[in-house]
Length: 181
Image 1 (cartoon, helix red, strand yellow):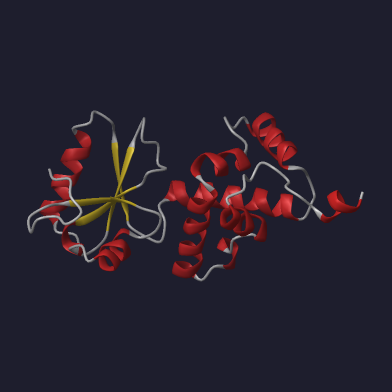
Image 2: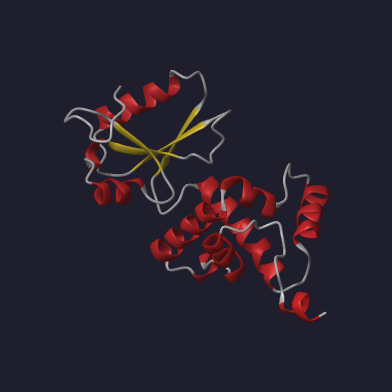
């Protein structure tokens, strides 16, 4: 195993990503046949998720699987795509909650409380967004939107603004009424 910015000609490259591993390989000048993705949102403490695309050399893929399995955690192998399952789900849930907050249908704290109590989630969707990072959620959604063309992955204005301004998703922030009332 190597840890370097520029891998040797024989290295298997594991990338943590927010998008397709094959796209990261091409973008970063990494060898696609030896580049596989590991989903950083897929339950790092309990399970590892390894993304594989059609150009991956089988020996490199087996080596990556063996390296991850050596951690003692179960490893799931999935097809590489615009975003792994955990990323798609989390980003979509956060984005829907951002849309609700954006439309002023509920306050961020109320959205999180309703989801925690009603669905039994350990965190509300906006809390998850803050935990992962609004910019990470935005990157995932933009990658999904571009990679699939599906409008359901279009990031909400609430998320886009807050990611750009480095504001928490769990807070309303300053509104026009705050200045005139």
